[in-house]
Length: 340
Image 1: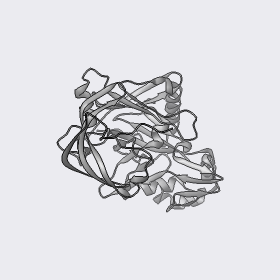
Image 2: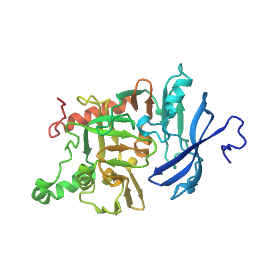
Image 3: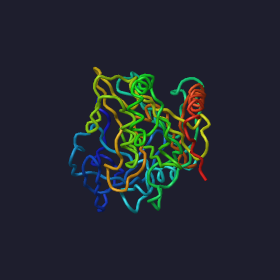
Image 4: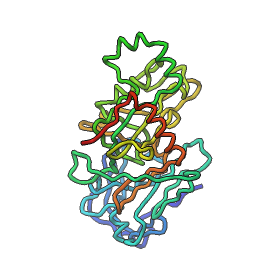
């Protein structure tokens, strides 16, 4: 099946400008001119939308299956200066719309397709009795304008698997000797808080540079792993911990705590596992944030509200109760972050 593609030559509403375009991405570079046309996203249209019509691509970009990229971030990420962003244009042309979009991402092995919702949400993809918890969008401290969909993370720690607990017990003497340099499973790596970018355009999960190595050492403790390739041998999913994220400022109430199970951030086949966690600092200087990409969005239906400026994360009521129980069980050794 071939999808419909854009052809500016056959479009009667397309207008070419003389503005040059240059896009620099992690996968390559792209060059062209800015043009305008009528575009539609679902039932919503934008009468004169400015976008880049590319004439040259480098790196891995020519091999992409997609025909184009639609930016859904804020003005600080705008690639074409002097023109409104996609979200600004969409809301200006459709002021009465429910100004949200959402992603239901599935894995390649899942027979159900991924879905993109705009102008509303569909909680039926979440299962029975879902609940949405919203978190306000904030500026990154180095930015004067909003850039990414960024929220606050007040608590990150790891919940050991049964097999990792057994490994720990069998190696207690060794661990006691290295305790002064090792983080405990209940260490809160986000005291008093961290910044988290929720990004549908990123495949993996990225940890801040200042915490990455301690987190990886804890994840791979007692396993046969190569931290250069992020690959472990003679293991399965049950060897890895669950990653726990508590968003927003304040105490953990269950509904603000979201768990990323090993199946969501590790890919295993034939007892060889690849950890899909990366160092954000390796993408450039001054990058000290968490980035939750496709790994996280596959686990949770995620809503982006560009009128009330908030991110909504959805999970089942049973999961919320279980999160709170697990958190309380850890509370004897885990220091809860309390912001001033």
